[in-house]
Image (cartoon, rainbow, N blue to C red; front, side, top):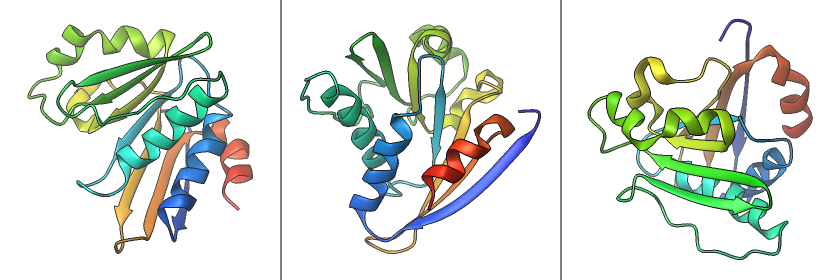
Length: 159
């Protein structure tokens, strides 16, 4: 990531986290990659689920969005937008990412990647890095690091 931009916020409830996911999803397109970091229970899957369900609902689809912890990747179609939700927690080497085809999806789909540290050097340079921290049962802190081109969009979303 050449020019970096960083912004932080806090959500006092799971619904606020989901609301931000829905609003951010309206700005995304194929080729956008969100790298979701944070400890277990920090809110990564909750965020991804809210985003995916919102995008599907815009096309009349209602679907359960399970965590891809065991399947590694779940894919969805929201109209012409393909969405890949990946959980790389169980991977042990970046080469396994190539076997999954995730590197190709970075070009053609909206990708939400949990445990992106497993990507190694395969993480796209222009990805949005979202780091979640659980402050208590309800409150989540979120820090986003992104290319400078995202500054105006992100500042408009984080009030």
